[in-house]
Each structure stands twice: as structure tokens, then as C-alpha cells.
Image (cartoon, one colour):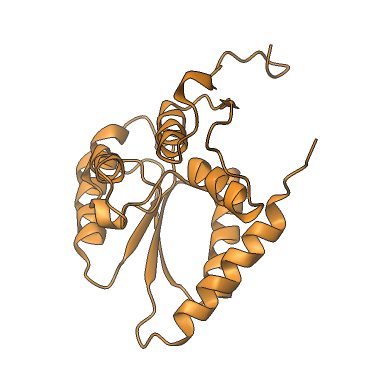
Length: 196
């Protein structure tokens, strides 16, 4: 069995991005949008800010109180979405209960949806748009396979994500790479101890 480690893949991608951005006069800008002060969001935020800074991507941090109303958040989010200086949006989820998460997700401009979570972004991806963003987990799997020279064509694959979005994207990516669609399985029943 071959163990595929993600760290060298991530390092190679970071180096590639740094080289690509060295010759750019204008650096891309990522908006990080957080509602509330959840520890897991704060931890991910620190990590994201460090990673973006490390490769030369600018960031703008937008933080809103956990009790913000839907009307107020929608207005603020629309301004972020429409800001021409922002190239990508990273929205921390889940959002508080008073916010209509699906409505907010669907409002993200597909060209700025770096997590590939909106229907429009997925539609662009599935239609073959090379500029579309794929959901990060599915994209990471394909990057790892590519890095290690593993060709999915004709292989049997099993994807064990619980999120429908990641399963569908992985299925699309594997079929596109000519993985045998008759040998794709997507088990997603989990127990507290992990997979059954």
C-alpha cells in the first residue's frame, strides 16, 4: 500500500503559486468572511491568513457579530461581492441560525466562489469551464493523485465524504479522468467511531 502524504503536494502548489505571482503587478485579493467568534473559525482564519501571505495573495478580513440580522448581513455581503478589488470570497460556515445560509451561498459571484459551493459555481465546473473553482476537498484529492503520478483511468475508486457537493464533484472529476464509472462507490454512512 502506498501512503500519499499531502504536505509535499501543498508545498509544491505553494511554490508554483509564488512563482506565478512574482511577475504580477497586481496581486489577487481574497476576502475572508466570518460571523461570530467560534474557535474553529478563528483557527482556520489564522491558518488561511498565514497561507495567503506566504504565497503573496492579499487578504481582506470581514468580521461580523454572531447576532447580525439577515438584512444587515445581506447588505454587507453584497458590498463584498460587488467590490472590484476582491477576486475571491471565502465564507466561513455554518452561519448562525438567523442567517439564510443557502441564500447567501447562492449569492456569491461564481468567479469569486473559491470554495466552489454555489450552484452557479458547480454549474460552471460541470460545464467544463477551466476557470471554475472546485470544492477544495475534491480538488485536493485530484491534485494529490496528479502529484504522485496516479492515473485514475480504469481504476476502482471509493469516495467516503458525507457532503453531497464533494461526492458529486469527485465523481465528476474521476469520470472526466476516465475512471471506470461502474467501479465508483460512495459510501457515506458513518458511526461515532468512523466508517462501519
